[in-house]
Length: 217
Length: 127
Image (cartoon, rainbow over all chains, first blue to last red; front, side, top):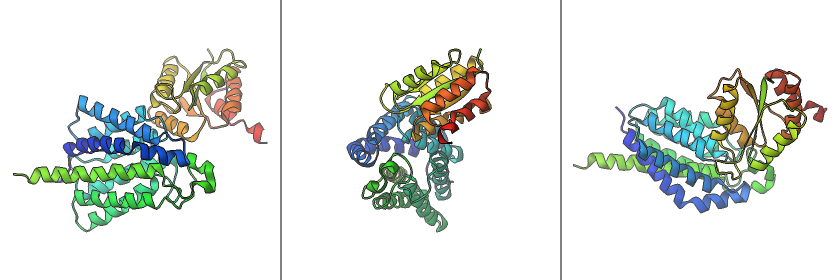
């Protein structure tokens, strides 16, 4: 029996809306440096729409929540992030258990990455969101194999994604709009990897909050 | 009715409409749909706009070839392709302007979906 269910998934999305709203300008600036500058705006609009949709009719399982997220992001996010995150959440929804344990967290994140790779055709080292997702999954897997909890797996994934996003700075982009800049893409943090790190950070925060609610007498 | 219809997907409303205008001049009986920009007409692509255009053409009995301008438009199209009858809808990969004209002319003279998508590559440009 896992720890994280629909309540966690709904809380994750609420926190995602907040964090992406807070970092809207940062993501815009990162994307202006090496892309078309719309990432902050798109993510902010997309996750506002996600939360509005979930508030209207909250699904009662994780898969249901993730499916609403996928369809809403696909519709509301105009840039590359729409189909990429949309596909990620759709694939994650397909493998999501009713209650996630650490192994299920790894499976969910791995399915999301497979979707991103299928859609964007990027591999690691190309200065894309794959460079955040990939180390996130590796870190979560280490926790799962050591018998850790779902919350610990998300915490490790969040750290892995944050480190991965930082590590995109010296990379030269070879996928996406930034690849047109060639050498000039070096020295900038990838906006998609950065938004991935924020998303996974709040997934971990929501997991911690879910736990603390449960232990409160 | 010309069997194969074309959907032009661009980040820009004007670019999509302009490509349709240009290609239609040489293919008067071909049905076109421009799916440019985001929902509110800003720069970007809209899953909903592309899906609605494809769905409407399928309902009308067409096979559908979809052309795009840049990578993220192509990703949006691929997401749409996962939700429709893949035997009747295809992504036609090629340079947008030349590809749309070449594909439209091929559709006009009765080419099937495979022939139209082949034409969209506008291979003569790179010969």
